[in-house]
Image (tube, rainbow, N blue to C red; front, side, top):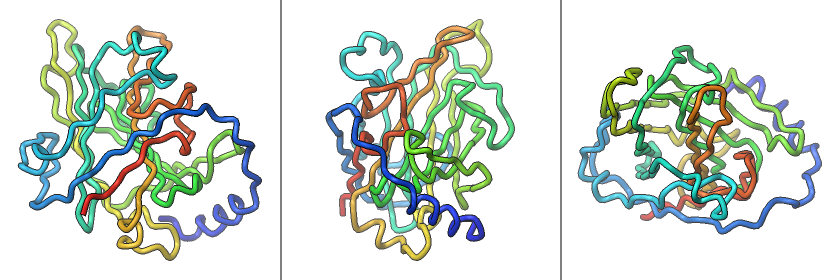
Length: 251
């Protein structure tokens, strides 16, 4: 983490008033992530025994909630594992035409169909992390000091040190002439890189985290895009850490 910038961000966020709680009241899902027993190879192929044993999440739904469920047309699920060094995330994404165009790190990845992860390890809705990637395995990662509704700012130069990602396409990338089955995302997120200031990895692993997942899908050129998420937030806005799901580390 950029130590030169972080103290200033901490000061700004600490002095910023919290917005009134006008967020939709939504059910909060919990995922019980098992501890990995063996090594996880980040190759986009979920063939390790630990992945086989990890529970498959509920199907993603429209970000606005169950009343919009008919708009969900392509299945999306996730799995999670952990060990003392990493949080492992898998995304299983049904797609009949896998595409990707952006190749530059920290490009605005949601302009493509993408996979997004939002992490708030201490559940304080401050200094949370966002990671996005497309089917080309191009990554955008950033640090938010607080949600946008509270005047939050994003810091794009921040990079998640040691992040490993891979994508496996079951089909033919960028070829609309055939029918694909989908693409799989695999991520290893170093827990030490999510520590802010004096936190230690073992302290983060001792409690639950807030975590959100989103899939942005452009069903037709020019949009609007669909937002399918693990835990619907009630609004077309993922920057509601209060309405993300809960990650519980099963020990």
